[in-house]
Length: 416
Ligand code: ASP
Ligand code: MG
Image 1 (cartoon, rainbow, N blue to C red):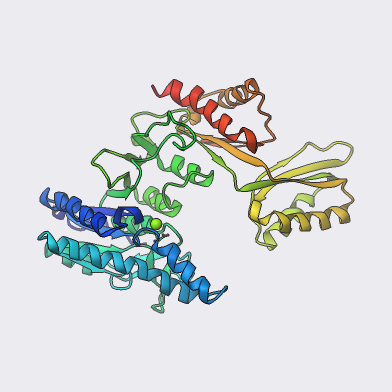
Image 2: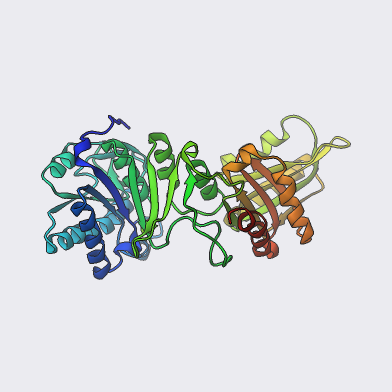
């Protein structure tokens, strides 16, 4: 994406994105218009990105499913892009009603050019001329999120939740550092409030923590939007459109005031574990196994191999539960061929993770986590670590307890 820096600082541009629930009803759209008015009154030029109203995108997918099990990907994107077209025009009307000049644009009208991968297109460039012209005419610019066009002018979509990415990309090409993401929660929390009542809202979080949390099951933002924000140094303010409270700022870790050892805990419950016991401990076996997984488009997450003994080794790894049967079939074939003892599947697992940039500069975090688990007799079946995260596969029945104890021992104790 071609980014030329702040185009016109005097315009004081702010980019705001409103998600589906924030524009879910006509009253909500009117409330969003009133909020935008406070920004124009405060001297901002506002660029607004909106998602489709409420559950519109789901409904459109269900509609297509009534026609065909296998919709053409081009036509599905054509269909899904209509949701955002409804909300941008209604929001423009709501602004007109309260005396604010506003104009809505589809992705194609502002030349949001993407590659040609329908349903998961990547933004390649955005033309700013039309937007800048409207802003200099003192209009609020409203852009349909989640959609673009490829170089042949086919309508594309960016993947579910992709409006976040549209907003951040716009902030980048317009050269503004601030992008507000309005949603129905007050920000990014230390844990899922449905499981942990004492969860608290983070004031700040780094890009890497957000990406790690998303990878490990706690997706607040479209991951690509965070990658863009990181690349173009944009501060994302995740906040609620239902009140005026400050939310959470997603920012470079260097600018953070406080760095917690653990800033969030999360559990991922959509994966299952496969173990292949006692296969030959020799070069090429793991390569074989995981090439087979890859060729069959099976997503593999954690991998653990036991140390070889008597020329035998065992390998455990996790795949999506929805892929388990397919993966098991392939593993059994390979196991028969290699003369391993058995292939075992375990569905009732959870991957419980702790994420925090503070881990980069602390010792003994892993030991403390394992101690917390062992004190509660929670058995750890697999472990994996990254620079700022530690994940443990445990029995699913202990997942909530594991989250609670981690939250208590690290977050409640350290963030107070
Ligand atoms: N409307 C799209 C969806 O529901 C895009 C978005 O909400 O960001 O996935
Ligand atoms: Mg949505």
